[in-house]
Structures are given as structure tokens and as C-alpha cells.
Image (tube, rainbow over all chains, first blue to last red; front, side, top):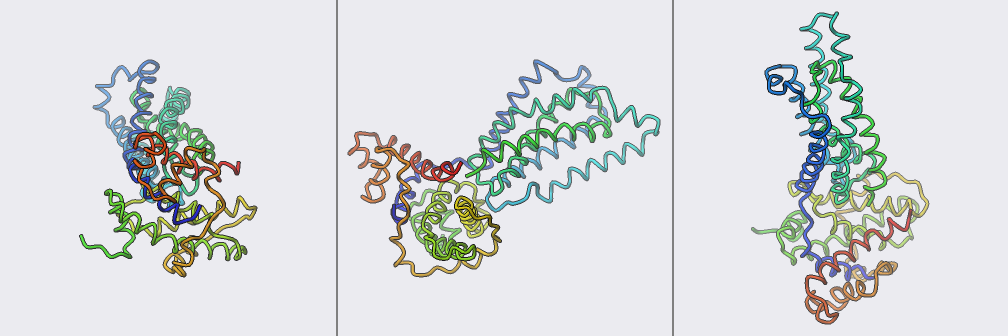
Length: 211
Length: 183
């Protein structure tokens, strides 16, 4: 086929417009999240004292931190779908570890050291390590399908960035169930729980995000 | 809005609003630029004599099918360069070289077209071999024969919509052809 003929064929194909990238990724995130919300509702469910928890600054800080993580992960996911992007995360995403360290520092300042171990270990660590990866599967699948329409320059890293968003969504959901609101617990176990998700995203992304 | 014919970003924005004339103008302007960039990349990886046209066509297909990944707020050229680079590296790997190319290596090249007319008819290894007979008839109809989707549909006994869908699928198959045959 001659190149000028290919150009003719491409111009003839403009009736089929690809959907906008950001909208496609947001839709996939919502769709995957909806499945996980259903799963969450029939298994864990929100904590019994959810209404009262909104009066606790630790609970609110946890939600705020995870919301920031979700929003930044959305930007990085869209960013990863563009061919110019080479890195796993944008500089803005450094805000998440910074906030984590700040919240740890705050907790250590305001609580006596005898309680640190109890706050760190909590009572839900194993549930946390299981629930967050499981709740991230549906968003991960939906997002990876959406990302196939993208043009990720490094498939592995884009898969990891996609998984970061899926894990952040799952963590935000799980946070409504978990009683352990201490930043010590959140920083440790939530972070550990996202690692297998990111590894899975990188592994699958490597295969499915090539173009 | 007034737009200069060499403002590629403006052409792509107009194309995104449904201006097919602008899209044709854009692709036509990109072909020699992409070809020069690919040729330079091939030369830099020790394959100076290699025919660039396969990579050029793969790049054009990717530009078309992935055009929603261009951020309208950004200039178009770095995006095109990234796609050309991706397809070139892919091509070199398939052909057994281990390569790393600096993105910036392609930068200057993208701005330097040459011999446009002489190369407009350049050929590539048959991309259409991955298509079935009907898809091939449709692609040939809209390109080689320059027919509209409706005319091609009348000829093949298909609706205009069915032709458009089939054409889009055919282009996707052509884009996936080499990536798939590699694994």
C-alpha cells in the first residue's frame, strides 16, 4: 500500500471519533468502582459507627489523604496514556508521600509513645492487606481496558500507574470499613496493600498496553 | 480563526472538530517530516539503507488511531515525535537490534522535510495482507479509488455505516498487524 493511499484511508475514517481520553479513564474508574462498591457492600460494609467517625480528625485525615491520592492518580493515569510520558508518576504525586510523612509526624507528636505500637498494629491489618487488593481488581480491569486506547510509551510503567489509581480507589472504599484510623496504621498497611496491586498492574500492563 | 498552513497543532485541533480538509492537510504535511525522522533514526542505528516506509505507515496509523491521546493544550510535534520514536524502536527490536534512542534525537529531524513530491508515492511492504477480502475492497475503495463510504457501500451491498465500521476495524487490524506477528 502506498503512503498517500494510506492517508486517504485515514481521512475517510474520521467519522469514527475516538472518545476523549480523560473521560474514558474516568468512566472506567467509576465503572470499576461501582463493582467494588457492590462487593464491599455484601462483604465488609461500612463500619457501624460511620456517622460518628466523621467527627474524628484521624478518620477525616485518612479520607482526605486517600482522596488526594485518588485525584493525583487519575492525573497520572491520564498522563501515562500519552506517548510523551516516560515516568511512572508526576512530580505532583510526591505530595502523597509528603502528606503521609506529615500525618505520621503529627500522630507521633500528639500521642504518647506507649500507644504507638498498638496504633501501628491495629486490629485489621490482615483484612486490610486482603481487602484492598481484592477491591482494586475490578477498577484495575476496567482501567486497563480503557488504557488500551491510550498510547503508553512504557507499558510496564503505565500498567503500574493504572494500578496505583485502582489501589487508591480500593483503599478509599476500604477506609470506610476500617476502624484503625491512626496515620501509623494507614501509612503502613495501606501502603503495603497497594504494592501487590501495582506489581500486578505492571505485569499485566506490560502485556496488554503495547501498541 | 486564521491558521497558518504550517501550524500543525491548529490543523489537528480543526481536524478534531470534524474538519476533514484540515486533517488531510495535516497528514500530508506530516508524512515527509515523519519519513525524514525515521530515516535519520534508522541511519543512527546503523540501518541507513533500510526502507523507512513500513515505520512511516505504522506511525501514521498510530497517529490516527491514538489521536485522542494528544492534549490540545500542548504542541503537536512532540507528540508526533514520541509516536514515531515508539514505532521506530518497536521496528528495530523486531528486527533484532537492541536500541535506545534519545527522544531529542528525533527533534530536529521532525522539522526538516525533504524531497516531498518524489517520495509521496513511496510504497511499503503490503500492510493489507492482514485484511480479509471485504476489508481490502473497502480500504482500496476509499483510498486507491477515492470513493466515498456510501459509494463503496453501494458497490458491495453494504450500508454506509457498515462500511465506516469495517474501515475502522480494518485500520485497527493493520495497526495491530506487526505488533501481533512479533509475539
